[in-house]
Length: 298
Image 1 (spheres, rainbow, N blue to C red):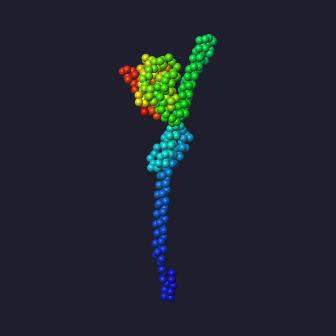
Image 2 (cartoon, rainbow, N blue to C red):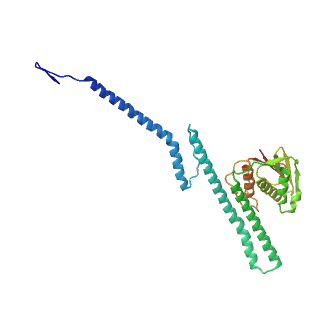
Image 3 (cartoon, rainbow, N blue to C red):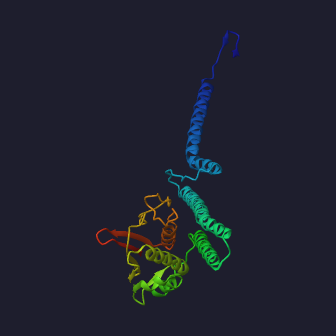
Protein backbone atom coordinates (compact mmCIF):
# COMPACT_ATOMS: atom_id res chain seq x y z
CA UNK A 1 0.00 0.00 0.00
CA UNK A 2 1.58 3.23 -1.20
CA UNK A 3 0.20 6.74 -0.55
CA UNK A 4 0.76 9.75 -2.83
CA UNK A 5 -0.87 13.17 -3.03
CA UNK A 6 -3.14 12.20 -5.92
CA UNK A 7 -4.59 8.92 -4.74
CA UNK A 8 -3.82 5.62 -3.15
CA UNK A 9 -2.13 2.82 -5.13
CA UNK A 10 -2.36 -0.83 -4.09
CA UNK A 11 0.42 -3.16 -5.13
CA UNK A 12 0.07 -6.95 -4.94
CA UNK A 13 3.03 -9.31 -4.71
CA UNK A 14 2.00 -12.09 -7.12
CA UNK A 15 5.30 -13.91 -6.66
CA UNK A 16 4.44 -14.52 -3.00
CA UNK A 17 1.28 -16.46 -4.02
CA UNK A 18 3.34 -18.50 -6.44
CA UNK A 19 5.81 -19.29 -3.67
CA UNK A 20 3.00 -20.48 -1.39
CA UNK A 21 1.58 -22.67 -4.16
CA UNK A 22 5.04 -24.10 -4.76
CA UNK A 23 5.43 -24.84 -1.05
CA UNK A 24 2.06 -26.60 -1.02
CA UNK A 25 3.03 -28.68 -4.05
CA UNK A 26 6.38 -29.66 -2.53
CA UNK A 27 4.68 -30.52 0.77
CA UNK A 28 2.09 -32.62 -1.04
CA UNK A 29 4.81 -34.46 -2.97
CA UNK A 30 6.73 -35.14 0.25
CA UNK A 31 3.56 -36.35 1.96
CA UNK A 32 2.74 -38.73 -0.89
CA UNK A 33 6.35 -39.94 -0.95
CA UNK A 34 6.25 -40.57 2.78
CA UNK A 35 3.00 -42.54 2.46
CA UNK A 36 4.40 -44.61 -0.42
CA UNK A 37 7.64 -45.16 1.49
CA UNK A 38 5.68 -46.26 4.56
CA UNK A 39 3.68 -48.74 2.48
CA UNK A 40 6.89 -50.01 0.90
CA UNK A 41 8.61 -50.44 4.26
CA UNK A 42 5.60 -52.26 5.68
CA UNK A 43 5.62 -54.57 2.69
CA UNK A 44 9.33 -55.21 3.14
CA UNK A 45 8.92 -55.86 6.86
CA UNK A 46 5.90 -58.14 6.40
CA UNK A 47 8.05 -61.32 6.27
CA UNK A 48 9.70 -60.33 9.54
CA UNK A 49 6.29 -59.67 11.03
CA UNK A 50 5.11 -63.11 9.91
CA UNK A 51 8.18 -64.72 11.47
CA UNK A 52 7.57 -62.83 14.71
CA UNK A 53 3.93 -63.96 14.81
CA UNK A 54 5.01 -67.53 14.06
CA UNK A 55 7.44 -67.47 16.97
CA UNK A 56 4.60 -66.39 19.24
CA UNK A 57 2.35 -69.23 18.04
CA UNK A 58 5.01 -71.81 18.98
CA UNK A 59 3.93 -71.26 22.60
CA UNK A 60 0.50 -72.60 21.59
CA UNK A 61 2.02 -75.68 19.97
CA UNK A 62 1.86 -74.51 16.35
CA UNK A 63 4.84 -76.18 14.66
CA UNK A 64 3.72 -75.69 11.07
CA UNK A 65 6.29 -74.57 8.51
CA UNK A 66 6.54 -70.97 7.35
CA UNK A 67 6.16 -70.34 3.63
CA UNK A 68 6.08 -67.12 1.60
CA UNK A 69 7.89 -65.53 -1.33
CA UNK A 70 10.60 -62.93 -0.85
CA UNK A 71 13.40 -61.52 -2.97
CA UNK A 72 15.77 -61.04 -0.04
CA UNK A 73 18.28 -63.80 0.63
CA UNK A 74 18.64 -62.84 4.29
CA UNK A 75 14.94 -63.38 4.94
CA UNK A 76 15.01 -66.63 2.94
CA UNK A 77 17.80 -67.87 5.21
CA UNK A 78 15.79 -66.89 8.29
CA UNK A 79 12.73 -68.77 7.02
CA UNK A 80 14.86 -71.80 6.15
CA UNK A 81 16.46 -71.81 9.60
CA UNK A 82 13.05 -71.44 11.25
CA UNK A 83 11.57 -74.34 9.28
CA UNK A 84 14.58 -76.55 10.04
CA UNK A 85 14.30 -75.76 13.74
CA UNK A 86 10.55 -76.46 13.78
CA UNK A 87 11.06 -79.72 11.86
CA UNK A 88 13.71 -80.76 14.38
CA UNK A 89 11.36 -80.01 17.30
CA UNK A 90 8.52 -81.90 15.61
CA UNK A 91 10.82 -84.87 14.94
CA UNK A 92 11.87 -85.03 18.59
CA UNK A 93 8.29 -84.68 19.85
CA UNK A 94 6.97 -87.38 17.50
CA UNK A 95 9.82 -89.72 18.39
CA UNK A 96 9.36 -89.14 22.12
CA UNK A 97 5.64 -89.79 21.79
CA UNK A 98 6.36 -93.02 19.95
CA UNK A 99 8.94 -93.92 22.59
CA UNK A 100 6.41 -93.42 25.40
CA UNK A 101 3.71 -95.46 23.67
CA UNK A 102 6.06 -98.34 22.89
CA UNK A 103 7.53 -98.21 26.39
CA UNK A 104 4.11 -98.54 28.00
CA UNK A 105 2.99 -101.20 25.53
CA UNK A 106 6.12 -103.34 25.78
CA UNK A 107 6.51 -103.26 29.56
CA UNK A 108 2.91 -103.91 30.53
CA UNK A 109 2.80 -107.51 29.31
CA UNK A 110 6.11 -108.72 30.86
CA UNK A 111 5.26 -107.06 34.18
CA UNK A 112 1.82 -108.68 34.17
CA UNK A 113 3.42 -112.07 33.48
CA UNK A 114 5.96 -111.54 36.26
CA UNK A 115 3.22 -110.64 38.73
CA UNK A 116 1.35 -113.81 37.77
CA UNK A 117 4.40 -116.03 38.34
CA UNK A 118 5.18 -114.34 41.66
CA UNK A 119 1.81 -115.52 42.95
CA UNK A 120 2.66 -119.12 42.08
CA UNK A 121 4.66 -121.49 44.26
CA UNK A 122 8.41 -120.94 44.12
CA UNK A 123 10.04 -123.56 41.92
CA UNK A 124 12.81 -123.89 39.36
CA UNK A 125 10.24 -123.52 36.61
CA UNK A 126 8.95 -120.26 38.12
CA UNK A 127 12.51 -119.03 38.53
CA UNK A 128 13.29 -119.80 34.87
CA UNK A 129 10.15 -118.03 33.65
CA UNK A 130 10.93 -114.94 35.73
CA UNK A 131 14.46 -114.95 34.33
CA UNK A 132 13.08 -115.09 30.78
CA UNK A 133 10.75 -112.19 31.55
CA UNK A 134 13.59 -110.10 32.97
CA UNK A 135 15.72 -110.91 29.92
CA UNK A 136 12.84 -109.76 27.73
CA UNK A 137 12.57 -106.52 29.69
CA UNK A 138 16.30 -105.98 29.31
CA UNK A 139 16.04 -106.48 25.55
CA UNK A 140 13.22 -103.96 25.33
CA UNK A 141 15.25 -101.42 27.30
CA UNK A 142 18.10 -101.97 24.84
CA UNK A 143 15.69 -101.13 22.02
CA UNK A 144 14.67 -97.94 23.78
CA UNK A 145 18.35 -97.07 24.14
CA UNK A 146 18.62 -97.49 20.37
CA UNK A 147 15.80 -95.00 19.92
CA UNK A 148 17.55 -92.48 22.17
CA UNK A 149 20.68 -93.00 20.11
CA UNK A 150 18.77 -92.17 16.94
CA UNK A 151 17.45 -88.95 18.45
CA UNK A 152 20.87 -87.80 19.64
CA UNK A 153 22.60 -88.72 16.37
CA UNK A 154 20.06 -87.04 14.12
CA UNK A 155 21.83 -84.73 11.62
CA UNK A 156 25.22 -85.31 13.29
CA UNK A 157 26.57 -88.18 11.22
CA UNK A 158 30.16 -88.42 10.04
CA UNK A 159 30.14 -89.64 6.45
CA UNK A 160 33.04 -92.09 6.87
CA UNK A 161 33.45 -95.30 4.81
CA UNK A 162 33.02 -98.65 6.58
CA UNK A 163 33.79 -102.13 5.31
CA UNK A 164 30.46 -103.74 4.42
CA UNK A 165 31.29 -107.32 5.44
CA UNK A 166 32.77 -106.27 8.80
CA UNK A 167 29.69 -104.18 9.55
CA UNK A 168 27.33 -107.03 8.61
CA UNK A 169 29.29 -109.56 10.65
CA UNK A 170 29.17 -107.28 13.69
CA UNK A 171 25.39 -107.03 13.31
CA UNK A 172 25.06 -110.81 12.94
CA UNK A 173 27.16 -111.37 16.07
CA UNK A 174 24.65 -109.33 18.10
CA UNK A 175 21.69 -111.52 17.09
CA UNK A 176 20.67 -113.83 19.96
CA UNK A 177 19.34 -116.77 17.96
CA UNK A 178 20.71 -119.95 16.46
CA UNK A 179 18.92 -119.04 13.23
CA UNK A 180 21.68 -116.56 12.45
CA UNK A 181 23.49 -119.51 10.85
CA UNK A 182 20.84 -119.29 8.12
CA UNK A 183 22.11 -115.86 7.05
CA UNK A 184 23.91 -116.17 3.71
CA UNK A 185 26.19 -113.29 2.68
CA UNK A 186 27.31 -112.64 -0.89
CA UNK A 187 29.46 -109.55 -0.64
CA UNK A 188 32.82 -108.38 -1.97
CA UNK A 189 35.50 -107.79 0.65
CA UNK A 190 36.17 -104.32 -0.77
CA UNK A 191 32.56 -103.08 -0.69
CA UNK A 192 32.04 -100.15 1.67
CA UNK A 193 29.11 -98.24 3.13
CA UNK A 194 29.39 -94.67 4.39
CA UNK A 195 27.98 -93.25 7.62
CA UNK A 196 28.02 -94.09 11.31
CA UNK A 197 29.19 -97.70 11.73
CA UNK A 198 27.36 -98.41 15.01
CA UNK A 199 24.09 -97.10 13.62
CA UNK A 200 24.48 -99.33 10.56
CA UNK A 201 25.07 -102.27 12.90
CA UNK A 202 21.79 -101.46 14.68
CA UNK A 203 20.01 -101.09 11.32
CA UNK A 204 21.30 -104.39 9.88
CA UNK A 205 20.59 -106.20 13.16
CA UNK A 206 16.95 -105.07 13.10
CA UNK A 207 16.54 -106.06 9.45
CA UNK A 208 18.03 -109.51 10.05
CA UNK A 209 16.08 -110.15 13.27
CA UNK A 210 12.78 -109.28 11.60
CA UNK A 211 13.67 -111.23 8.45
CA UNK A 212 14.51 -114.36 10.47
CA UNK A 213 11.50 -113.95 12.76
CA UNK A 214 8.93 -113.70 9.97
CA UNK A 215 10.70 -115.76 7.28
CA UNK A 216 8.81 -118.79 5.99
CA UNK A 217 12.02 -120.82 5.53
CA UNK A 218 14.17 -119.21 8.27
CA UNK A 219 16.64 -118.02 5.66
CA UNK A 220 17.97 -114.56 4.76
CA UNK A 221 20.16 -113.69 1.78
CA UNK A 222 22.39 -110.60 1.75
CA UNK A 223 23.82 -109.30 -1.53
CA UNK A 224 26.25 -106.37 -1.85
CA UNK A 225 27.52 -104.53 -4.91
CA UNK A 226 28.71 -100.99 -5.70
CA UNK A 227 27.90 -99.60 -2.25
CA UNK A 228 24.41 -101.14 -2.37
CA UNK A 229 23.13 -103.84 -0.01
CA UNK A 230 20.00 -105.99 -0.40
CA UNK A 231 18.26 -108.21 2.17
CA UNK A 232 15.99 -110.92 0.77
CA UNK A 233 13.76 -113.47 2.47
CA UNK A 234 10.55 -115.42 1.89
CA UNK A 235 7.51 -114.41 3.89
CA UNK A 236 4.50 -112.12 4.15
CA UNK A 237 4.77 -108.51 2.94
CA UNK A 238 5.73 -105.78 5.38
CA UNK A 239 2.78 -104.06 7.11
CA UNK A 240 3.79 -100.71 5.59
CA UNK A 241 5.82 -99.63 2.56
CA UNK A 242 8.97 -98.13 4.05
CA UNK A 243 10.24 -96.80 0.71
CA UNK A 244 8.46 -93.46 1.05
CA UNK A 245 8.13 -90.84 3.76
CA UNK A 246 6.17 -92.13 6.76
CA UNK A 247 4.75 -89.91 9.48
CA UNK A 248 2.47 -92.40 11.24
CA UNK A 249 4.10 -95.62 12.44
CA UNK A 250 1.00 -96.88 14.26
CA UNK A 251 -0.17 -100.16 12.70
CA UNK A 252 -3.82 -101.16 12.39
CA UNK A 253 -5.04 -104.60 13.49
CA UNK A 254 -5.11 -105.72 9.86
CA UNK A 255 -1.53 -104.55 9.25
CA UNK A 256 0.33 -105.96 12.22
CA UNK A 257 1.48 -109.48 12.93
CA UNK A 258 0.00 -111.30 15.93
CA UNK A 259 3.29 -110.98 17.79
CA UNK A 260 3.73 -107.36 16.80
CA UNK A 261 3.58 -104.53 19.33
CA UNK A 262 1.24 -102.51 17.14
CA UNK A 263 4.00 -100.04 16.28
CA UNK A 264 6.50 -100.40 13.44
CA UNK A 265 9.34 -99.85 15.87
CA UNK A 266 11.88 -102.06 14.08
CA UNK A 267 10.92 -100.57 10.72
CA UNK A 268 11.15 -97.09 12.22
CA UNK A 269 14.74 -97.77 13.34
CA UNK A 270 15.68 -99.15 9.90
CA UNK A 271 14.13 -96.24 8.03
CA UNK A 272 15.52 -93.55 10.34
CA UNK A 273 19.10 -94.85 10.32
CA UNK A 274 19.03 -95.13 6.54
CA UNK A 275 17.82 -91.54 6.23
CA UNK A 276 20.24 -89.92 8.68
CA UNK A 277 23.14 -91.77 7.07
CA UNK A 278 22.03 -90.05 3.83
CA UNK A 279 21.02 -93.25 2.08
CA UNK A 280 17.79 -94.30 0.40
CA UNK A 281 15.70 -97.39 1.06
CA UNK A 282 13.70 -99.32 -1.51
CA UNK A 283 11.20 -102.01 -0.51
CA UNK A 284 9.60 -104.44 -2.95
CA UNK A 285 7.50 -107.59 -2.64
CA UNK A 286 7.18 -110.36 -5.23
CA UNK A 287 3.69 -111.78 -4.67
CA UNK A 288 4.28 -114.80 -6.90
CA UNK A 289 7.41 -115.95 -5.06
CA UNK A 290 6.46 -114.26 -1.75
CA UNK A 291 9.89 -112.68 -1.65
CA UNK A 292 10.69 -109.55 0.35
CA UNK A 293 13.51 -107.32 -0.87
CA UNK A 294 14.90 -104.39 1.11
CA UNK A 295 17.66 -102.49 -0.69
CA UNK A 296 19.76 -99.68 0.79
CA UNK A 297 21.62 -97.46 -1.66
CA UNK A 298 22.68 -93.90 -2.51
